Image 1 (cartoon, rainbow, N blue to C red):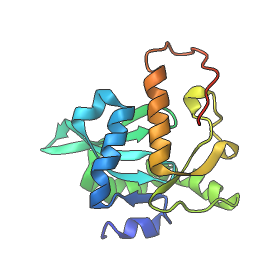
Image 2: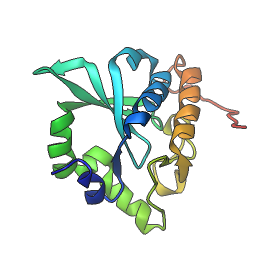
Image 3: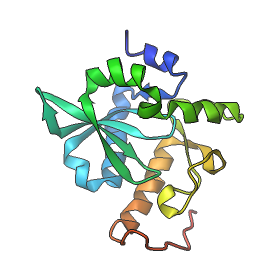
Length: 172
């Protein structure tokens, strides 16, 4: 199966970055996750704006493993496979785990649209600020803006203890 077909199979739930978009999106991810900056290279994103990156600190059989970077939760999740296995197995056999495909179908059924390559369906209120993980908290957004805003918020709350109440957040 050719990689370009995965977008068709998943109806836009997953897309590879164009070559010229890899560096800018990697830079945005590095800003949001500075502890990972020296080891990641983002190659794709999903409909929720999460980025998939090769993790050069986790090499198995000579291949970097995959990291899922989530701007709406502030989490980096290790996926135990390389680029090829991710595309040939994870996306095909486990689309729900890989790109929240069932949630994507719910979004579409509720009247949501498929984001284009520079958009995502991001959280209106990120989960780390108390937002709900449901359809009512989602909105179509510019992917780079979503990462920029989430990265700035994450930078400001990173050193706070878990459970710290954050208030008076404004975006202008």
